[in-house]
Image 1 (spheres, helix red, strand yellow):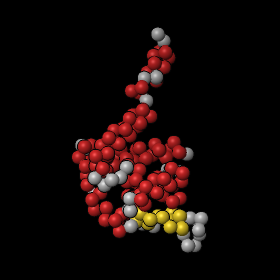
Image 2 (spheres, rainbow, N blue to C red; image 1 turned 90 degrees about the horizontal axis):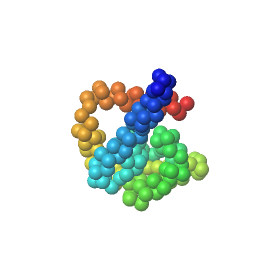
Image 3 (tube, rainbow, N blue to C red; image 1 turned 135 degrees about the vertical axis):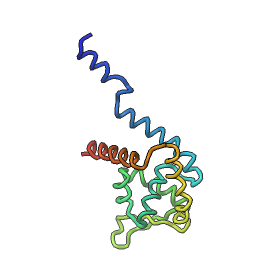
Length: 149
């Protein structure tokens, strides 16, 4: 076998795919998050919406979509479920009726305190130092940004 053929064989091994490492890590995150989020009655994408709103309430659907890298068609059903649960309200922007604003309800705001257990639970499972975690987050975010260019 030539060295090019050996290199091609290595390239085609699933364990050598960075994309598979990220993909499978995503599935592992989902499994870890599931029991943590069940106490909040949230899915992971719903949790992300709530985190954005806890940080900065009263955002447009478009703004949330940009930050989460989601299309409005994906985000809207999720927001409807959060509204049905009583966590948010969706209202038309008075200045621009084409825009829908998303706001926390009192129930949604109060959920934040309970949600502080989620990142702590995740940290317990990962066994990474704060420095390693931040380095990894920056590297993955940089990779994502490069791929989105």
